[in-house]
Image (cartoon, rainbow, N blue to C red; front, side, top):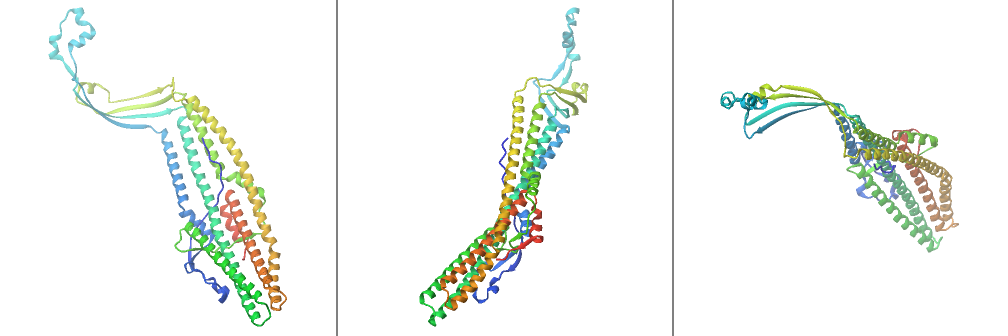
Length: 481
């Protein structure tokens, strides 16, 4: 019995409310023109996206069909205790009619020899026809097993284990889909924030370039300073265009995942939490509820069922049976034969060529394998939860730790612009200040993104997907770019 190694994945998707995205108003006349293909967008929250993915994702639909399949197989196994009733009909052509003659009767009794009788002359007068050459019979036969050595209950245990395995495979697929959705969804949110940052840099450097041109005309700065400002502005415009294309690419992936007709635009922002429950809470919940462990339990149940089934081959099989004739010909044999019969039958296995002893040992080895796999899976899950928890805390610390750097970067931009206008700073100083501010904003957004991804992985592996809304809506602190 081969069992795949447990893998953790999380994902979700879809739903949508048509809305016209027009972010240009927040930047006034300085906002660069957006791609016309991405102006009309569909706004979708993360919770709505997840609900939609659960209902429309083809992979999840396939797993649900697999659950239905094994549920029907389990129902079929319940019928093994019922009797088997069959109706049969037979037509037979004999080489000659079956007859009984006085001479045959007395010859079988050895009477004619002892009495020196010749009865052949009586045959034409007293010959009786038992059956004709054409024989047609029909009957109903029932066989009801009453003891099978535990093979029926073992088959039902195996079917139940397969059904449980299919259900937990569906849960694991949902976890994988939840993680995938979080990566696609908040990946779009992150690229949108990066684009907003690049737009702000471009707007700021454009103002700086315009200011530099004015100062050059007044003879307050050298030409090289104006060229530096112009080159920096052009580079910022290129970076903004690249960020815009990155957003469009991320939107394409999310839109396809959600199966929307227009580009998807997330309405749920990145967020952080002030704190998380202790790590032990996630570990305990994971070891108790992770579907991969339940799959191994189902595999063990199937292996135990195979042991019982193979052991059952050593026991006799006892059954009730009955037969009732539905049709009989108008012959002497038919009239003298009974219409029905019932009885008890026993099958005792004396020599079996199916290799039952070897199969019992193989099933025991499968149980041992599952036990080792479960122990290893628990260890791997503990490491995974601890690693993911620490990554979430690290991202949270990084995000909070950059707050002071963000304030410093904003103040530095203000002072460098002021100093440049007074001839106390160079254009390069202003550009460096703008770039530093952009890098801090991007780093904070990336930290928030990593935190959300780690959180969704924690919630998925511990079976707490439904509590995501509580972390985001009721306890979350929204991240602004």
